[in-house]
Amino acid sequence: MKALVYKGPGQKSWEEVPDPRIQHPTDVIVKMVATTICGTDLHILKGDVPEVQVGRILGHEGIGVITEIGSGITQLAVGDRVILACVSSCGRCSNCRKGLYSHCLDPEGIAGIGWIFGYMIDGTQAELVRVPFAENSVYKVPEGVTDAEGILLSDILPTGFEIGVQYGNVKPGDVVAVIGAGPVGLSVVMTARLYGPSKIIAIDLDDARLARAKDFGATDTVNSGDADWREKVLALTDGLGVDVAIEAVGIPQTFTMATVIVRPGGNVANIGVHGKSVDLALNELWIQNIDISMGLVNTNTLGMLLKLVAEHKLPADKFVTHEFSFDHIVEAYDVFGHAAEHDALKVLIH
Ligand SMILES: NC(=O)c1ccc[n+]([C@@H]2O[C@H](COP(=O)([O-])OP(=O)(O)OC[C@H]3O[C@@H](n4cnc5c(N)ncnc54)[C@H](O)[C@@H]3O)[C@@H](O)[C@H]2O)c1
Ligand SMILES: [Zn+2]
Ligand SMILES: [Zn+2]
Image (tube, rainbow, N blue to C red; front, side, top):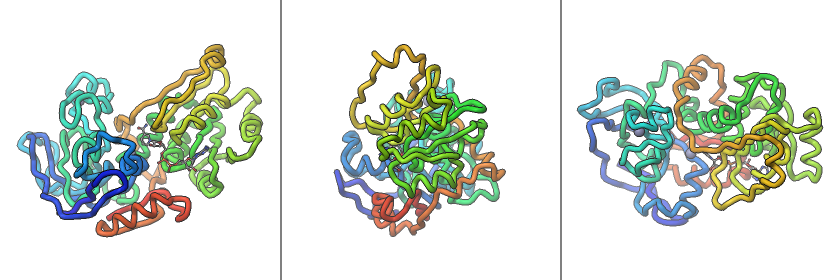
């Protein structure tokens, strides 16, 4: 089969590799129908994630059709069209039993981390994929859900919803600010609406991304390149700050931005993957009674979000801006890696 292979920092190749085989009774083999690229794949390619070995097949998002099942599989069958969760979880360890799939303790890949596709084991940017713990880690796609909708459920929609909206404790009537209007921030905008906030303020440096945020349901936008961006955000509240400030960029500056717009008693939810440590002004923040949360997506809400997508309550198809065939995947990386130039959001490879 062919797959996108990591060749070391800055290097990748779509090339012939051996087909994956069933290794454990709980595995299935999936023929990929569609995959996509995540900002995290770009981090890996830059060499920011040194634990990824040369030769690793990249990717952790995808939809495919099951072609082979392990001897322990009873709930899935050859021919099932399934969404692959970006987190693989055994469903049986003590963390999985708490719904903390992101910290699955099974030794497959690495014990204690559920995100292993395209990181610790071969990933989804391939013609065929071995999926471990398939019965807990894939979801059958209901009739009528397209590839462009389903692909968002592997990672991006659950991430925005779980680590942004749920951890941020968004409540009816809240004023919610989302810093960063990339795919993850826009997933927050889309899924925050499920809780009936009074306002959703999108904050970004890029006006094109802000315009898109309005289309995704943001009520207001603020360009954080403006010197008075903070005053503009506070003016959209009662003056005391937002109820929930959600960070969806992953740099120190944007985390700090979240802490200076949140009201006393509010929540700061960090989604961004940070490459370096971030200062926390506890000397100023301790007296504000704010909650700060963070985490790796669990994908434990994937099934629920899939129902909403199937019922057209979440317009997940809005994310895909560009489409490529599998053998043009390197071109897809070029477009996604220069998203602003191409006005790209999510690329569908199928
Ligand atoms: N916690 C998790 O489980 C998880 C899962 C997936 C992705 N992530 C992380 O979420 C983050 C966002 O992902 P994405 O794919 O949407 O990223 P992205 O790079 O596509 O989007 C980031 C957005 O932030 C904007 N931005 C950059 N600097 C800014 C600043 N100073 N002020 C305001 N806006 C600024 C950019 O213009 C862009 O629109 C990344 O760090 C990614 O690694 C986390
Ligand atoms: Zn991802
Ligand atoms: Zn587990």
